[in-house]
Amino acid sequence: MENVFDYEDIQLIPAKCVVDSRSECNTAVTLGNHTFRLPVVPANMQTIIDENIAAYLAKNNYFYVMHRFEPETREAFIRNMQEQNLIASISVGVKEEEYGFIESLANKSLVPEFITIDIAHGHSNSVIRMIQHIKKHLPNSFVIAGNVGTPEAVRELENAGADATKVGIGPGKVCITKIKTGFGTGGWQLAALRWCAKAASKPIIADGGIRTHGDIAKSIRFGASMVMIGSLFAGHEESPGETVEKDGKLYKEYFGSASEFQKGEKRNVEGKKMFVEHKGSLQDTLTEMEQDLQSSISYAGGTKLDAIRNVDYVVVKNSIFNGDKVY
Ligand SMILES: NC(=O)C1=CN([C@@H]2O[C@H](COP(=O)(O)OP(=O)(O)OC[C@H]3O[C@@H](n4cnc5c(N)ncnc54)[C@H](OP(=O)(O)O)[C@@H]3O)[C@@H](O)[C@H]2O)C=CC1
Ligand SMILES: Nc1nc2c(ncn2[C@@H]2O[C@H](COP(=O)(O)O)[C@@H](O)[C@H]2O)c(=O)[nH]1
Image (tube, rainbow, N blue to C red; front, side):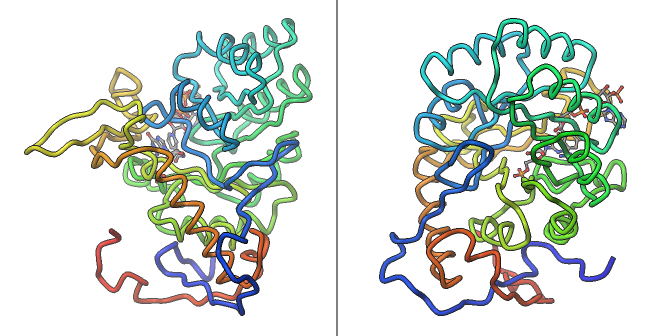
């Protein structure tokens, strides 16, 4: 594959500004039948989202995807959200019991607005079968399938009925897939996103590897409709990860969904745990992301997210950071 690059190798080129204030720029995005305030979704991981955060995000018109690691709570979660007139957005796996779960939701006329099929290697018959099962029993749920890293995978999952695909194998901050298996999009996630987006006829969610708010704009430029982020959402007051104190400073844990901390055993481990600095409230980060993205739109010379999709870019071979730390 030619033209391999990642987030830090790219700079977007400014176009003439058409607004007098960045506040005129609108970061809203539509996915399925719903419009959200930001093209950003916190990762469906146990140290990133819980039921309280999900309700907060939904109430404030942000997209969310609840994780699947307390499977027995999902039915009550859907009921609770929908009783509050909030969208229900859940995750499922592909094991046998998940088929029964989907059927039981259908039998009870409980229809989540969004269902994300969340497994490591999404270009697989198991995901195709699950997409078809969901579409048969819950045809009105919007199905996000992943994760994948090739155009062939995007096309196959779309053809199976997925309404969106999630791209990113191994670029995550707590991912060790790339090290343990030698496979993935780690180190070239942005180029992989572009490669996949060219084949896609439905929305793509870029997943993993976002280290700065500018990376959100870059993802949009290279074909993402939405961006899933873990590490930048870890460490908030509200984050479910455990808080620890070290040398008088507060940190919060962030662990991979395929780590031994999640699995409770050392079998097929492809994730690790780290501690991130405690960083205040979730809303502060969401607000800063929105302001930064409004600014990105103004640099793109437009008033809406779409303006970013058409800007020129350069590949900066020596990295935009010039050896500086990101923050
Ligand atoms: N985005 C990424 O880069 C990655 C994300 N993850 C995250 O970790 C969590 C656990 O993922 P996962 O292990 O898939 O979920 P599960 O443990 O639920 O496994 C799903 C099913 O797929 C099988 N499976 C898993 N990996 C493979 C593979 N490489 N080839 C064939 N079959 C496979 C499993 O069987 P068996 O275990 O027996 O093989 C199991 O039957 C998810 O939340 C996922 O998103 C994990 C790795 C990479
Ligand atoms: N290879 C693994 N990837 C994982 C694991 N748990 C989650 N993830 C993926 O990472 C992103 C978040 O990435 P970040 O760079 O924003 O922190 C998440 O959405 C998953 O796709 C894991 O254990 N192994």
